[in-house]
Amino acid sequence: MLKATWFVLAGMGIVFATLSLLVLMMSALNRWLPPEQAPARDEGQPGTRGARTTRAGHA
Amino acid sequence: MAKEIVEAPAPGKILRVYAEAGKPIAEGDRICIMEALKMELPIVAPVGGMVTALHIAPGQSVEAGDPLAVIEG
Amino acid sequence: MPEGELLGVFALTWQAAVMLGLGGLLIYLGIARQVEPVLLVPIGMGIILANIPLGGLTEAGGFLAVLKKAGIDTELFPLLIFIGVGAMIDFGSLLERPYTVFLGAAAQFGIFGTFFLAYFLGDGGLRLFDFSFKDAVSIGIIGSADGPTSIYVATTLGSKYAASIVVAAYSYMALVPIIQPPIMRALTTEAERRLAMPARTKKVSRRTRVVFPIVTVLVVGLIAPKATPLIGTLMFGNLLREAGVLERLSQAAQNEMANIVTILLGLTVGGMMEARDFLRPETIMIYIMGVVAFAAGTAAGLLLGKLMYVASGKRINPLIGAAGISAFPMCARVVQKVGLEANPHNHLLMHAAGANTAGQIASVVAGGAALVLVPFFA
Image: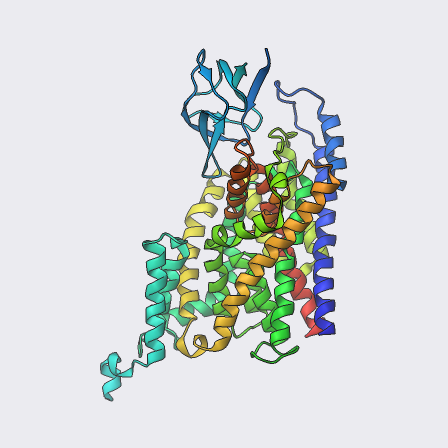
């Protein structure tokens, strides 16, 4: 059962590692490719909103 | 006079509208029912008061955060 | 000519009769109760066709045998379905809330936890059931709550229970609204469930939506290469959707192709359920493990949700963690319903949809991870 335990840990490890990278990538995409023009009703700048997302991503 | 703007919780379509502009509404009364992800979402008044503006009609598409109605109480 | 060749009724064993009844039950559930009719009706009919004695559909060259060889043994059907699924999924709610990816990741514990239990009951410990390491992994994959991934992993690993596993995965997806709410209420407090989350999020640009599927294939493919066929077809479908200039192809993938392959897949999976492979204690155990898998995934998502609730200073409702298992959009709807029960102003749908679509990606990654790791352990 020891090898089963390692299998579980390694599996969850790969899942979290891959998806952590995906989060970084999504945050980067949101920052580098902000909406072309912010919708008129939305206050605030696209840039600052991007920054906020990055923090949320690490929360 | 507190002014409460009711916003759409999700992008979707307005199915039925119950509130009327210029009429009073009680807290918990239905404003409208909208559809998102093929699910009906009942939108109810967060406060009681007067509906001073209504921005929706049945069949209309809305984005998340769009104002649906304004209630002044 | 022996009389059995003429009248099938003389060749009918009680096992085959049970299977015919089971096929009828699935068709009944699908049509009368509307439980996932799109899948259960073809599967039910497939079971009936495969178990009529002397029908020959599952013998070499028979209709169902040919379909199985062409579409399941080659893993072609699940991959084609995934193109359609990718074209149906809007990853916008995920891109607006990247942190929900972790909820999808946590919920994959359903896969690995169930594997552990299955292996313990089988070859790894008690030896009560005939579950090899590979069978246990395949059973765990039911916890991905994702039909195509279940088929892909179970057939790639060559598990002898592939048919039961696939049927269990699809049946439990229909039961998500029954399995999940009790666990959600047990693991969260009233105050947590009442927490409303803001409707408004920052918008995601079209360019982000177009680049996302491509970069995801690169990231996932380079880390877990065995997941490339699944993530590749899923994201190709999504690229068709988001490209903006391929509306025709996107519609074809979502409708015509997905529908045709669903018909073929359902019939074939039903056809794999022959009495001699199906009526054994292991099958019943697989069904029990399926509930365990869904429950464990839900619980793991909720627990990470609770951690996020605390870490975010009570701004994230832990319920959305339950949507981390990838049955889309059923889980998101369940979360919305349970949240609304606690607080009539609490619309968690889009937040849950973020976790739910993350679960879709995460289950593919988990399936790929399992395939990568099996050779090192089994």
